[in-house]
Amino acid sequence: MLLKALAIFVLQLIYVPLLTLRTTLVVKGERNKASIAALLEAIIYIFSLGIVFSDLTNISNIISYVIGYAIGVYIGGIVESKLAIGYRTIHISLMSKNQYLVNKLRENKFGVTTFIGHGINGEERYRLEILAHRIRESEVISIVQNEEPSAFIVSYDLTQFKGGYLSR
Image (cartoon, rainbow, N blue to C red; front, side, top):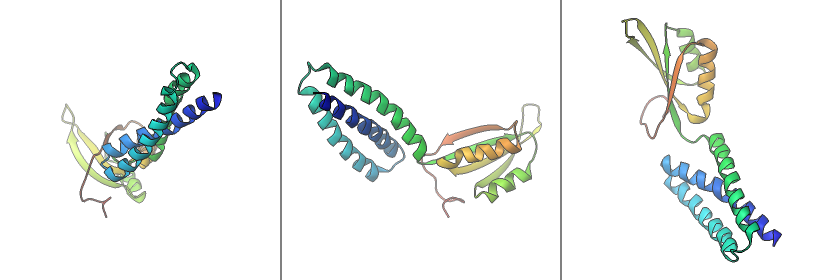
């Protein structure tokens, strides 16, 4: 009886991160990989629920399912952030031109496009637009914060792009 509860718990620890990964792959347009993840996910789902539904009076099985699911969500979030599938566009706003920062980002193989804008009172602002693999987003932010601690940084998730420095 305890063995079944343990099996349910372990299956949930595999199932839920797989569900998170599948959802991420679908959102990122990786349909083939998402389909494979969905196949594995469905097999695990059927087995674990089959054990739970075989005896709904067994509270330890139900508790194992619920706790395994909750911990699986946490693990899934960690796995997703480690894989960091996809790309980010990162906008950096600076009060003054910093060619050293631009050069440093480019030396680290980041594509940087620069723009000049104007603030509310007409003062010039300098904006950098950077496209990076999501796994390298923190690297960009670290470089910018080291060189320009007062920089305003915004990053966006990309769904698709064509051309440019990264596609070479």
